[in-house]
Image: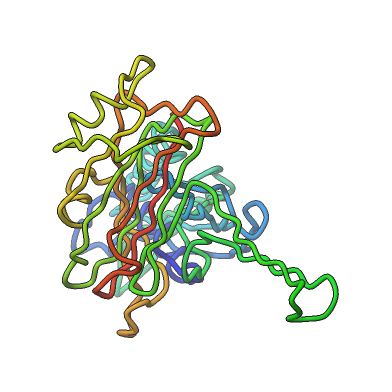
Length: 329
């Protein structure tokens, strides 16, 4: 995961490395065939080199970026005679043109033969015939970036001082959506309210050593529910009771014995993402994306219906971060 983008040297090396694959094998004592850059200009890809965004689970945390090179590259082949040199270059050009689809997939948006002078003789110490060909190449190098993000935005506090700053009239609120952050400083509950069909849960987890030990509880309930929710012993029995269009239970819960048990119900959902340095060890933190499908979905048909995911304590008892999101069906 890049944080600032690759250097031009890396991009040129990647481009030439792909073109190297089309060179014929060396034939000693002749010099080795080669491909090199004669001229080059860098071109923009979209705005800020951004091509789009990729998700990890349900988290849109990865920026897809690219760098374009408008280059003139030179192939140089060697042979014992002029006819062999011409034949070798014709074969090289034929293989490049025949592989256009694969070249496109490798980032070569344009590959056009521009000039190929006649083979020339190079005397001792080489004593061989050289054939060159220049190709105009438009190459796009793809990479991923987190744009230097330290974390995700899970909550936005808003303060309003209509009269005097810090006065008694001050109003404070916090804006959230279906995502929350749990860490060793705070672990507020995730609450998803109807109208909303919860089709799954997604997490981004950074647990550098020991996992936090508190329990995690899923509660499907509604405003005005009377008494304690019905307790289910497993996630499967909980979903059988509260999920689907004809769910018999509107006031039930299931508890996982630990955060580790809760996360064990999830499956990997892509490559890790590098975000910040929460444990202050000087190394970017690697967050693992994971996803849990709730099948059938937990339907919350009215604004009084809700699904809450609650950690036992007000904060983790170990250094760790979990981003938790409820995903719509």
